[in-house]
Image (cartoon, rainbow, N blue to C red; front, side):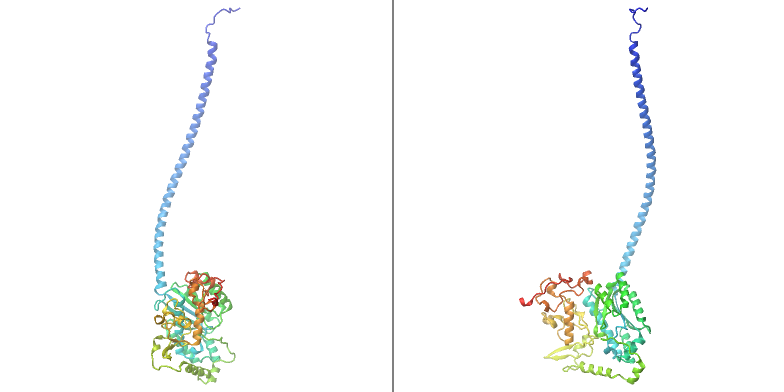
Length: 483
């Protein structure tokens, strides 16, 4: 039995053992955490190093790409500069072609647009006269309608008229319009009138003239120096496809329809109205009636019946012309009309009430162009042109007016002048958005003949400036009885 009163050798031994164990456990736990953090840090550093290597490689690739792109941009900039210089040279050349020597082209179907009887029977003189009328018609239209300032020598006019020689000669002779000699001399006179005018005999064949005309249209309208093409073929629907192709190419604005006496084909006329294609009228240059072949009556038969002499109809026409061309009261040998140019030969001045007047031969000057509102003195074939206001209303300029007051116009010419003014010359009051006191009796136009589809309006060049000038619905006219 152990003695309970005996003192133990180490009284703290029982208490130290548990405390040391706890510290050891704590140190182990702390070491484990440090080892874990170290392992995580090592993984993080390894991942960062790998990612840095990938990014470094990507940067090197991007730098290489950047150098390549930089070289490409420099090369592109160099090419851009070269192209800009080339474009400038081309624009300069194009401007030179368009403006240094602009070209006005007139192309006609001679089988449909046949020259007038009065011109054909004159032979060479009639051919030269036809060329002069055609030239002055084109010049008059350009000076009146075009916004471009065309001077006398700033452009060239080229005219080609294609016709079926055998067929046209037969029809003219069968209908007793002229004989073979007259027609041959007429062609010679027309071709010799100016170097750039030609009547082209394409030979026999129904569509030979059409094919020549279509290809000539395609050739000339695409030339940059071609400003306008006066087209005389609206009588045939076969040209409609060609006109539509020009619309697709954006060249339709160059086309001007040269209208004679023949009625336009229905489809072509509808298309012209829809597209507001400009029209230049020259009625006295062409035959008024459409000729038809007369089966069984060839050229030889006609020549044999006339005995090779001028037919009675032809002689009668000459007598009528001689009778009407000489006024009852005239001044012989006076050269007042000598400065009227090629369109007014042998027109004798007339004295009425002590004042000398100059008649305008209707066969020489078929169209009176209206120009006083635009102050274009050379818009008419006459120099100076007749004054619109003087012959239609009242001219307030008197002796200071730059236009002619001394012309003796026939009733037909006065009526033609009124009709042209009524259609083409804008009313000054309506143009200024003011009410026109003349109402329906106003001699001037209150709306643009082109209407909402006016081509000149789209180009900003239309002379009709009034608010309602291009609208379908027009304001009610002013009742002049209220004033």
